[in-house]
Length: 574
Image (tube, rainbow, N blue to C red; front, side):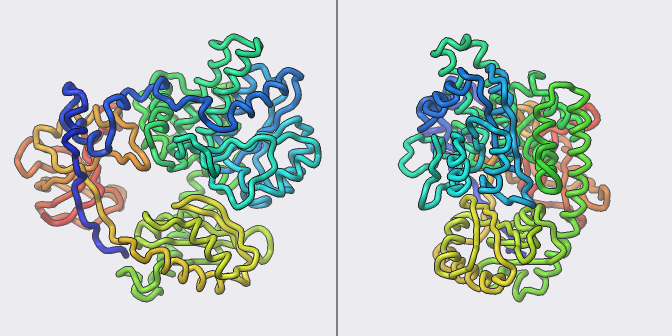
């Protein structure tokens, strides 16, 4: 297990603090200044979004779709099987239909049969639908062969993606990707659904300029897709830079105003969450897992159909099926996690970080749709990069998922493994922090050796010690309902823009074990004040009478009664 984290307080630059509005709560001023937020960014409205036309290729893609719209030809959207891909698929399908395209369909290939990306097999499946143009969302930038196969059959291909490109780009009709080499668009953190949003926003402008509709009507389906953009952006764990915070904030406003689409409202209902108080944590921890369950265990078409459902009854039925799949996913993940912990116990020095820079695990009974979740948990526990493998559907093939730590670009590590380690038929793709891969089973031992060797180079000079950054202490008087409410609706918080975490000493007044898994606490600030409710999730060990804890101040509205609550992230004896 990784050593206990070092607790450090974020620096609050005084000039940034003073530049923020004096009317803002001092705690919020401190939080925003520590995250280098300018006053102009606080509103997080669409007027501050990076201009649609500044994303390379997006207007060319819109012009190509304009020609398709004029002749009412068929469009096929080819998506991916995670929440980002599902929301991007639903967004483009719904927006095009809302803009008068009469033949719009989608295809999400089964991950267990076709793997990731727009492969030649997927291109052949797509061609059977006879589209004039294929739009890939959240994939395609590395699909050299698949794009070539589609183009050879006379189909135009618009690639929209945000993943890093390889040495060669596909010969698509147009590529829209903020992370293409040489692309000047500053919003590099857009995810797949964010890129899709820019595409449909550009299309609304092109249709308006061509006299094929009034802009106010054309932009309606674009704005209606902001709930999907918020969900996909949070779920994909891309950094919430200023541009992404605008997209998420606007989507959350729609949800809170009761304007979420029926499928999303139904997912909130089965998750026991209220859209009227929606925040990014609800999307990341309650809604996205239910949507992702379809892609992990079954077919993401179920998730997309739920998001596209116009009839509330259909939406509820599909959401219920997704909820059941998610329950199955949780049970499977718990079993696999226990097996992984058993493997970890057999690795020398695992409890102290060990001599190996990373972990590589495999179990023939594991499910390929769940290994990414197992890798994430092990990475969090050990503080080391992890790759976990399961058998693929194809005989002799392993499917893996890798998760990394700050400072170690996992896709670059895999590229080095493939090149210097000479791993036969290793295929991979992903980001700095996460990647998926495919490996012949007889190459596993060779991969393990190369993986450790390349990680040793990658972590050299990287501080792998865990640091818990906080926003400092709160005074006893600041632990109030008003600040809790402001923090709940502020942000939006997420990857790269962390939810405020505070650090104080407390007296433990009462503690009770719930469901043999979590501690419900009654605490009093060390300086006095009223008792406050707190939850320490996934902790069973009784606490001493005085503790130091890092916590989030939020709202608990379970049972319809809203009250302040602390959520404990880390604690130790005072």
